[in-house]
Image (cartoon, rainbow, N blue to C red; front, side):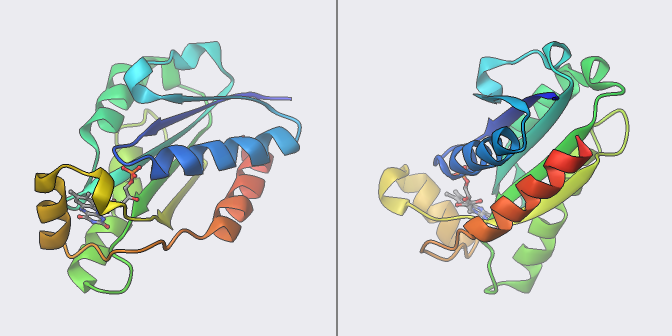
Length: 165
Ligand SMILES: Cc1cc2nc3c(=O)[nH]c(=O)nc-3n(C[C@H](O)[C@H](O)[C@H](O)COP(=O)(O)O)c2cc1C
């Protein structure tokens, strides 16, 4: 059994929902799991392995995710880390999708060693729950509206992670 921290950075709650789902798959596989926001500054040295995920804004992961990884770089040495990002470029905007595809690597580049797994999930938009300026920015980023979450993809990656952590 591995003691796994699943840390997430979210603004709209989608990355948290995905983190919780991954946590459930890791639990199913017999690991001990703690799912917590990077805002709560969890200490990775209290765990055997770490999974970190972030939503994307304007082509980049949320600063809070990178900041947490940077702050804990020493504590992540020799710990297996899985990385995911959640985007909504879907098929609308090739440039946006290209930027989103690079986001897991953006997170991975702050790690002291390469991650054991990286992936990009499609998310969901909830413009009603956002600030007006976030709705404008989402429109400018051509983020489509709707629910594009692919729980089968999340479950499959959770199963892969369970083997690698
Ligand atoms: C202000 C804003 C900007 C966004 N910019 C991008 C973007 O550049 N690329 C992208 O793929 N998705 C973008 N999105 C979509 C989010 O990444 C997506 O909704 C994701 O599910 C959000 O995760 P969260 O709910 O955990 O914050 C944007 C969403 C908002 C609200």
